[in-house]
Image (cartoon, rainbow, N blue to C red; front, top):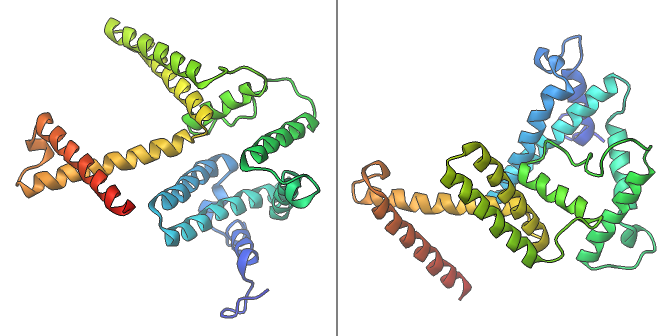
Length: 277
């Protein structure tokens, strides 16, 4: 396929050609040639977050651009792998295509149609079979839960993996009881002034929160992103209100800002009520 404007290759073919040129020792880009899987990995993670950010902001134009940047990361890694004879972009595409077909037997095979929840359980079952089919290696059930994941996401995945073999609280009530217990232990260490132990207890609180999110089928990262956005909205409301009075947060005090925070909450509730009418 060719581009109707340039006459050259279009789509993914053009992108692969660009990447090949960038990594060409004869006339390529010096920076791109210096890179390795390890040095590019942080950019890959950053681009994934920028995709999530565009989605959070509801900007489809930015999303298109950010998805392109993320795709370029895939192409970059595939090019470096091709150079050492490990795999290439086509191998990546064939692999993920086969995996998606294999993990959706209710679409591509004769499995019965399932609800979303049943499909999720079936997906995890198929993944477990795939892991079992791989060459045996010493290690833990948890070894392939990526260390580089955001901590809350990894905690959720670790607890979900353990839950598959029965290592989990049997109901949400017990998770909440454990959360109260961990908060009490955190409070005790704070009162004792032991910062190191308070740090450990805070980690325990967050881990139980991740378990609670899993039980509620809530993505804790998404929930926290929503709360972050809410905090930004309300604090911006405070800044705007103070500016209208010829003041600023630095010139205000906690009591005044807290009253404005409550005003922001009321304004949000009124906006939501008007939207729901």
